[in-house]
Length: 564
Length: 46
Image (cartoon, rainbow over all chains, first blue to last red):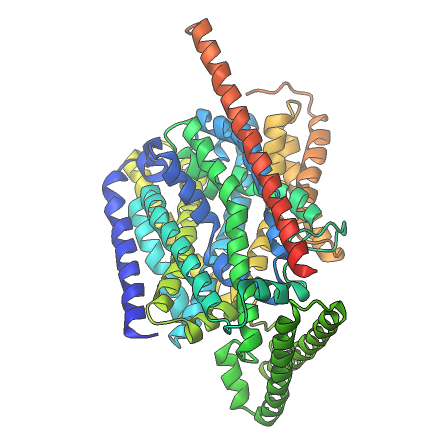
């Protein structure tokens, strides 16, 4: 990073922290601190909804996914528009008019305190772990860019966000989210234009897309019905629908967004922005990853994108093996580069046989190249003893640092920070709200004044921030972070959704059914994850259905009339 | 509790109808986007 890049990043950080901290003057009461006095306009809430969901994992992990695997991941979002419509009809008016602080507060009115506490507890576990993963992603970037240890970068990222969230509450979270979304969009577009400008002169965007398409990286609709396949049209439309309903409708970090809106109508509009924008935005982010793949057809990529691990092996006991594999890798790259150039030259050929031949030659060269890289990755796994080693999260940051001009590196790093901090702040605020309202106020000190609960909210924010930092230190070794965070979520979300479905749509449901149904749901998901190869998106469906069916059946055993 | 006046009920009903139109527009847009992505993928993968 050059001086200009540092200036951009530092200016961003200083501005955002200042902007968040100055919100403290609006956050004196509990309603102000946790719900912004229900006064926020739809466009601010809508941008905050998107910013909360778009973490640095999306920018780092999804671009890495695009590079490695292509666009199949976009199917994950196909259920989102329908989910938003369903929530606009059900959850938004429901929670808004219930005048609750948390989604789980409503469950006590419907069922009992035990069910509310259990549901809120599972939210705290899943989000507490999830926010740790969200902190890990940008820390990975900083560890490459600055050469710092991941421990230092995790605490620097996590604690700076914790500070303005603690001080400013949900107002700080929302208004900083608005600025952060602007920076993210701007950074993405600039990144895209610069990648395209760096292709060789004879390679157009169309050529680049044909090249990517030849390797299967442009698949956006896979109609295969296979429960073991992670990303298909069906897992996205069905599994993804359940996940989005659970996440946007039952997760406090999102429910709290629309509870801050001025009215039910503005709350609905804020969700519908995501329904329109989310899929095109994900396409844009995946396209960046795919175009980075194309870029590296013509410029040599490192065999190992994680520079720290690469250096360890290069200078360690297996240096000779590494050098030998690297030589093979460079040779495989040269062959693939030639094949890619031939492919592009023949794309417009009128001879289908010539086109097919160059395509086959390119695919064969690409396969050899991938095998050479695979041997390099296997060597790093052996040398480091880390069997789960993967460098997919380092692809995009490495590309940015090595190939973007001065100033743009800083802008993209700032965008990644923005994505991380917007999500971290919302999650910490939601965790603090649930902790304060669902546990502290409900069970420990129900009669304190507003200022006391605001103070507890601030303390809870700080403690969750520190916990999340420790989770982050573990999360960096878990593989593609976008998959990790969604796997965590899918473990709990379907079951949490099931409880709300019982509450809203099953009048015969009783507290006993909801409570034990939830436990059965989580257990069923654990069994599915442990003993089957079912893709994780389907866990949302399994969890929800088990909770609803078991919850309903158990409710039939309750003879006492419902007292609500 | 105030009784709803016909004007208020009519306004509510018109409001609901407007929201339904918005929901349909959202779903139609989503189908168009997914369809466009399908054809994009087919064109560049062939």
